[in-house]
Image (tube, rainbow over all chains, first blue to last red; front, side):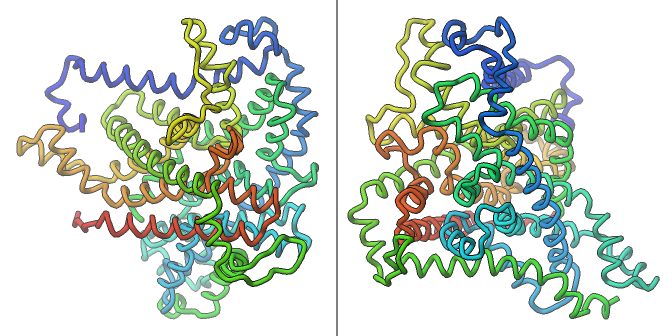
Length: 283
Length: 295
C-alpha cells in the first residue's frame, strides 16, 4: 500500500522503524536455533555444557565423519534422492497429464474427476497406512523403494493437479488452436506446447513434491526396516533414544540431513513465490 | 480444434494413470480400513468381524485415546489461531514494505522446507532440561522448567512447547499463501480508496480482508488438517511421553498399529482421524461463506 501513498512520506516514520525492529527480532527467532545447531555440531560433548553458546574452540570435523558412518547417512542420502527424484518426475508427468485432460479437454466427467482427485487433499496418509502395509507385504513391496514411491506419487497428485489445472485453464486458446490448424496431434500439443507453457506451475509443484517427500517420516518408518533402504528422516531416528547422549554427532547428522533442502531452497526460493502467486491469481 | 479436444482415446490415456494409482493406493485401502476398523485383528491371525467393538473401546475404555483427542484438538486450535494471526500479520506487513521484502520472506519460509523430523530433534535439545534454553535461564540464575516432561495442568507444558515449534515451522507457508493472494489484488482498488479518504487500516479492513477470504478458507483448512495429522514433531520431541501424556492421534495410531500390532484397533483410530478431518473441512467451508467479488 505504501507504493500508492508513498508521495506523502519522505521522512522515515517511527512506525516503519518499529516494523523493521519486529521483523528483525523474528529473523533472530528463526535463524538462531539453526546457527546454534551448526555451532554445536562442531563442538565436543563436554564443550556443549561448558560453553553452550560460544564458537567452538576447535572445529571437530570428525563429528560429521562419525555421524555419517554411524547413521549410515551416505546410503540414506542416496535412497532419499532416488525416491524423491522418481516421485518428482512421475507425479509431475501423471499429474499434468490428468490436469490437461481436466482443464483443457472437453468431456462430461471432467469436473467429477477433478472432485475425485481433490478428495485426496483431505485424506490423511495415516488412514491408509495399515491396509497399504498389509497389501504391500503381500506383494513384496515393503522394504523396497518402489513401495515408498507409489504412495508418494499418489499423495502428491492432488496438489499437482490442483495447481496445474489452474495453469492450463488460463493458457491462451489461440496457441492451442494454431497448433491444431498446423496439424499437431493432441499428444504433440500437450508435450510441446502446454507443458513448456506451464513451466512455472510445474516448477512450484515439483519443488513442493520434492520437499514434502524428502521430509516424509511416518510412511518410510513403517514400510522400511532394512538399514540399507532407509531414507534420511528415518535414519535420523537412530540418534534418538539409547544413543542420544552423543549430542554433537546427532547435531552433525541433523545438519547433514537438512543441508540438501537448504541448498535447493536457496537456489529456487524466489521462484516459489512467483509460481504460487501466478497459481493463486489464475486458479 | 473441438474434435481434437474431444478425442476420447487421448482423454483416457491422459487420465488413466492418475485414476488407477489413486484408486489402488487411496480409495481401495480406505475402504479396507473401514472394514478392518470393524475387526479384531492382531496381524498374525485372520481378521474377525466384531462390529463396532473397537470404537466402543476407543471412546469408553482407552485413556490414551482421550488424551490423544484432547491433544490433537488443542494442536488444531492452537495452530489455526497462531498461524492465522502471525501468517496474515506478516503477509500484510511484508506486502507493504519495499526494502528487504524478499530477505524476510525467504527467512520466514525456510523452516517449512526443512525436515520436521530433524527440526524436532533440534528443538527437543533446545528444550532439554539441561541444555539450550535452560542454559540461558541458568545464566540469570533461573531454574528452567522441565519443558518436555512437566505434566501438570489440563494442557500440559510440553504441548504448548510443541505447539510453539509447529507455529515456528509452519507459519511461513500460511504467510506465503496470503502474500500470493494479496499480490493478486489490483492496486487501483487501493488508489481509489485513498482518494476517497480511507486510511491504511480502513483499506485493509474493507479491501484486503474481503478479497483474501477465499485464501482464508484454504489456509485454515490446511492448518487444521495439517495439525490433526501431526506426527513428526511429536514423535521426535517427546515420542508421546511422559506416560503417553503428549500422544496425539497419529502417534497413538502408530503405537497401537506398529508397536503392539493391533491392526483392527489402529484402523479404527485412523477412521476417527479421517472423520475429524472431514468434519473440520466441512465446518470451515460452511462457516466461512465466500462471497464472489467481481474484479
